[in-house]
Structure formats: structure tokens, C-alpha cells
Amino acid sequence: MDDAVNLCRECDQPWRAASLRGSLYFFDPELEEPSEIPIEVEDKGGKECRGNINRRLWKETCAALASDERVGRYERALYAALCGRLDEILGVCETWEDNLWAYFVTMLETLIDKGVEEKDAQRVYIPSNSNGSIRCSLSKYQALLEPAKIVEALQSHESRSVRTESRDPYRRLQSAVILNQFDRYLEGYARSLRADSDDEDLEGTHHGASPSLSSLSDTSAQHVVRLVVHVILYLLELGFELPVNSCSEVIERYIQILIANGHRELVALYTIKLPPAMQSRVYAEFLAGIND
Image (tube, rainbow, N blue to C red; front, side, top):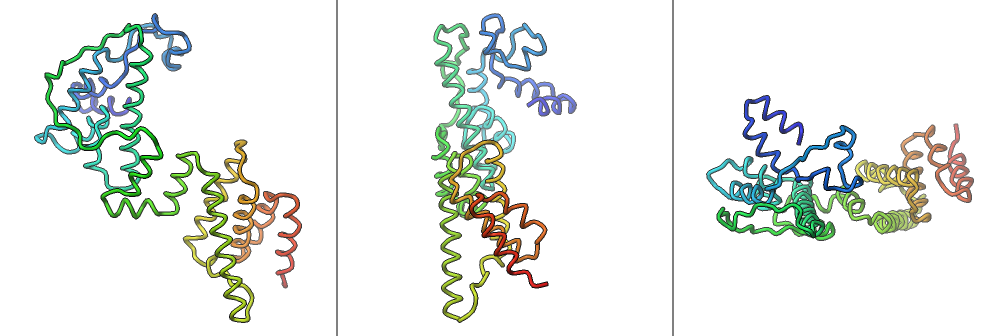
């Protein structure tokens, strides 16, 4: 927001800078508990009132501007994003990430507004109300207030490209992290790797050959495995508790990829991330395959 406001001022558009700053919530340090005062204001020793006490009126004005078809689509989307109106934001969104951001920014705007109204039980801050004098069209899309519903909405999105992106392995991983469901994702991903391994063993048996590494030769699949492994290691480093067996299966699979691609110098680095009981077996199998 600071960058946007500064850019408007540099372009000799102070009126636009002022309209953007209307989104800031009003607060008076003299009336707030010390723990409720934003850290950056407290550090600066600021004691003056800040923000927009007429924010409700400002939001209605933004909604009216966003619904005015005479205004450019990106200008409409900008003010729609500020006031939490979904229709005009989605009008300029093309990718899965664009739409995800649009739904989340409207969710946050709606929930914060609701929280402020509930917290201000004494009505210390009485916002101005336009009494409906500012007209704007009704919003076709309503804000979704739960992250899980947002992800579901993208999976059934009217845009075919967005629906396709929702099935992308990286988007599935992102969704699992966003929804705090990485444990469930990890268990499902480990099962899929196990199923691939079983298919490879069966194929090798039918052809009278050693188990193939067909899925490991798929570069895109290798990248997904690598990403999942490093997310696992990162979360473990932060102290998260993850299903041990699933973690071990994915890491062991990545070690097989390293061996298959000739990255011998990295094998030990990832082997020590396995449970002690597995380390000797996995590294012994690696050494047994070295003939030079």
C-alpha cells in the first residue's frame, strides 16, 4: 500500500493516493489497549489518530466506482480489491493464483470488517453511513469465508484453464499447505509413490527383468518429488510433526532418483534424514550397486 501511494504521488495524482489510503482502518492510540496498537506505530512513538473513521462510506463509494462500467476494468478491479467486491477482481484474473488471491483478499476484508464491528461493542468509533444513497449493482459472486471453500470453488471454476491448474501437482501441494492439510497430502502422495513402485515391480516380473525406473525417468515427476522432500525437511526443521512412515517413503524415493541420475555425492546427505533403522539398509543398497 505504501508503494502504491508513493507511486501515485510521484505521478502527480495525490487524489488517487488519498483514495487508496481510505482503506486504512481508523484507530486512536489514546483509546486502545497498548497490546492492540500496531507495532510500527508504537515503535515510532506515534500518538495521533490514524486511518479512516468514515471507512464504511469509503467502501460504498469504492463499490459504486467498481460497478461503474464507464470506468476502466483495471481501475474497477483495483477498488473492488480494496473494498472486498469479488466480481470486478475476477474480471481481470486469468490464472489459478490470480483467482486464489482474489477470493482470499475478499475473505480477509469481510472477516476483518466483521471482527471490527464485533469488537467495537461500545461504539467508540461511529462510522458515517450513506443510508444507501450511493447506488451500485449487486455483486454476483459472494465472498467465501473459509479457505477450504475457496479451494473447492477453484476446482469447479467456470474457466477450464483454472480447473486444469487446480489439478496441477504444485497447486495441490500449495492447497494442502494453505489448508493446513499437509499431513493428509503427504500420506496420499506416499501411497501414490508406493503404487507406482508396485506397478514397476509387476512390470519387471512380467518381462523377466529387474524392476524398472519408468516413473523416475519422468523429469516433471522427479521435480515434484524433490519439492515435496524439501517441504518435508523444511517443516521438520521448524518443528512440525509429520507422519514418519510417509516422510521416509518419499525421501527414500528421492534417494532412488538421485542414484538413477548419477548424483552419488548427494545420497549420504539425504540418507541421514531417514530414521536410523532405515539408513544402513538404504545406503548399503546404494553401495551394492557401485561397480567402478
